[in-house]
Image (tube, rainbow, N blue to C red; front, top):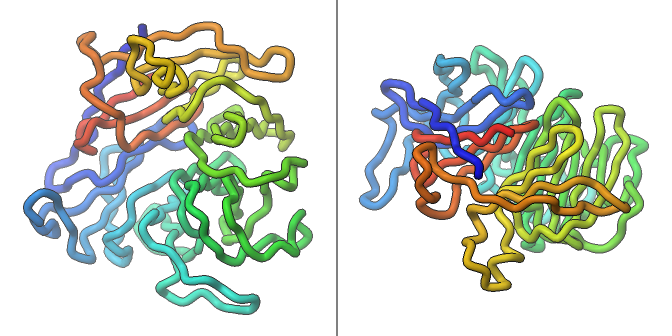
Length: 316
C-alpha cells in the first residue's frame, strides 16, 4: 500500500489553477490573484492580467499571459507555460503564426515573456527535460497542423500531424524528436502519462500500451506493457511505477482502476508487472475519486482531487 503526502500549495491572495513539479520534483504552480477571479456560479473564470507563477513560496506576476493558461514546468532558469485550450487553425506551408496561434510561452524568473511558441493542437501533457527540451503528449483527437521541424531533423518533409502521440520540441519552438524517427510506425493516439526527471523522459502511450524511455544520453527504448490508460508514471532507473490501470477494471476485479499502483521492470523486451497495490490518502482512506491535475517528475507523482489548492504527492 502506498500513502499520499499532503502538501500546502496555497498562497494568500491567490487561487491555484495548476500545480506541478520540475524534473527534480520541486513544486511549481500557476495561480491567479483573488481579485481577478469572476464567480461564474458553478466555476470560476479569470479576467486578463491576474496570472502569476508560484515558485519556492513566492508569486511572480505575469500579467501579459492570457487567462486560458493551465500547465507549467520549469525550463532551466525560466518557465514554460502553456494552454491546452488554445488551438490553431489548419496551416499551410509558409504560413506564419498569428497571435491567435500561440499556445505556449517561455517566461523568465521576473515574469517577463521571452518567447511565444505554438506546440500543436490537442495536447494533454507537457514536461521539460534537463537539456532544455519541451516534451509534449497529445490526445487521440485528429488535428492537422504544420510541424516546424528543426533543420536536418528526421521527418522534416512531413509538414502535417494527425495523431503524433509524443513530440519533443526545442525551446525555440522546433520539433527535434518524433516516434517515427525512432523506427516506429502507425498512429499513436493518446499519451496517457509523461515524466521528465534526472534519469531521462518516460511516457505511456495507448499504442500497444507502449512505454517510451529516452535516456539522458539520448538513446530511446520502447517496451510494451499490460497497463492500460495509466494517469501517472514514475521511474527510478530500474522500476516503472504506474498510477491507474484500467485493464484490471475492465476485468471486473474488486479494485477500482484509478487507485491502483502497478510496479514493473523490463524483462525480455517488455515491462513485466511484479506487484499491484493501492494508493490511499495520508490517513489511509481510499482515494475520494479520480485524481486530477496529475503531474509526474522522476520518482514522484502529484495530483489533486478537484481543488488545485490542495495537492498530494506520491514519492517512490
